[in-house]
Image 1 (cartoon, one colour):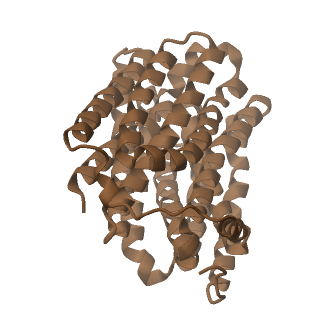
Image 2 (image 1 turned 180 degrees about the vertical axis):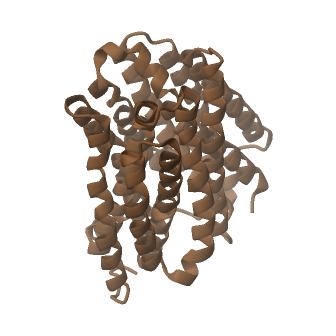
Length: 398
């Protein structure tokens, strides 16, 4: 293993986790400043970031090959610091929204390149290294809302917090750039497997695999996971201040509760996945979500909401990593194509459901809008059962 690349990747993904909970933690403050625009406009913020993330994810595959994994990581970090500083200074909603498109684009490139860098650097223990990577992400996402909530409560402006997060990325990017230059060009060049250009037949094969029933089921699971999670995290702080009477700090802390559960759940799923089987684990998680999500929407008492958010984090935790593992297991030759498709579906999940949640909230209520997303949860059980039934079937291209 390349220790330098692992250290850079883990540190970067902790900051990615901080960025993941930044908007949910700041949402009450942002909504307060732009309240005249309505909840539909507020609902555009997360989809704007997600639209940029899709573009960044697609560009990162080409960019990491051309520039090298580590170089793309620090270049993306430096660009992210600039984008956050510009967004923090934007007072027009359209400019602020555009800033979040750029932030999402750079974050997509950064996340993709870090995952690829860790995968290349830990070729003999990819599963362990990637599980640890996503655990570090959850830790960063769990701690930051508590810190942000405390700073907001103390009176620190949300724009200062956004710019401060950009400053962290600036420091990270400079340190990574210095390490890259000190050790010469991308050290992973000697570690990463040699990439051959794909002939048209191979590209057509990849497209055919993505259209396979099991892959379509995994794409749906990735979409549902992020759709339910992102919609809930985007609106839960605002919703629970009214429904459960939580303070601003208490409502923002629910984001930390969710990510603590997500982190714990991922380590538990990593320990159980091989014993239970991937299809069975997805089935258990889907059934658990049916039980844990309703208290978030229906609970009028703070304790019920807290337990519901924690349980939802546990239920959602293993869905995407297990979907990635299942796709790689079924289609080892086309793992790259399947992983890219799942990542795009994951990002679409963070784009579309939050948009319809905000729009529904404007014409009904946040409670009704969040409740509609229960329909997504209902689809998980039949999808997992389908995957279990199809496990014995041979995988094309495997």
